[in-house]
Length: 392
Image (cartoon, rainbow, N blue to C red; front, side):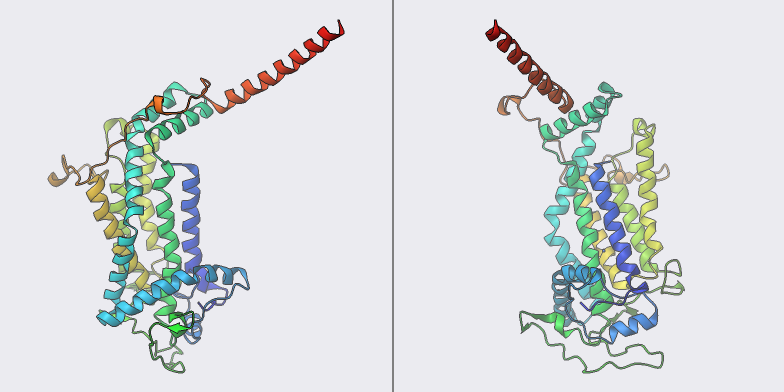
């Protein structure tokens, strides 16, 4: 990928990286989408679209990031070009590419959904542990880790796939912002000197009166939408909060649905838990963050995210049903009452202690360290006593 000039062209990728880092921090705390130019000022976009796309060189920090994501960019771009040639419609090609990617990732996201649901089913036992060791955080953590190990549950398994999905947005961002706007992306279709597809691009860029490149090698327009640039119906594109995108609104609504479905079913006991209330409030607020960057990210990226989120909703519905989607403002529709998912999740049985290696009766790591220290002290005392005995 061609390395864009520093400046506002990096706003989109930096937002995606910031979201990825946010999720990574959440994963590290336990349970509870690229280098390129688009959505920037017209001059920046024109400069990038007029430079033939080339694989990035790791000669600076931004170049290193672009170089690391270049293989993924090429894979996505090649698939997109093949589907565009087969369908003759770039929007349909984006939808098909997204579906193919999500089908490949079904096992990973299924594991995420199952792990999240099993962690929710363990909530009563976790609360009992917290009551039993109230005031001793170390013992709580040790007991929770032991409980998860006995049930074969990894709490982080429900978070890491979300990080993967955000990281995939980075090369996907460049596919739409650069690949669909550049007049000559041919070099990104060459693998080890072999040309997979010959796009027969123009030899030079053509500019209109405003200085925009008008001879993109791939046709980025379908259904009246240019999928390589931001599309807003209110305000103007180019910076944060400068415009409102219909695709961003649809994306926010679907994210709200999938995030609420992932929540546990609401109960009266949970209603009194402040942590649960905060979790449900975040499920309402976090999806609408996408409204803020709808004016700087290309429409194709939102189409990819919308289709991917719809796929997640269907997958969650089959595994966990409606989850915590309802009641919504106190209302529960009839089809959501007593609904049983197609592939319900159950807790695995506890591991039989007879099949596990014997463990010390000491429960915590701190107690084990104290016991080791005591043994060391007694050993020294025995040594001094033996030497005194020999002197006598």
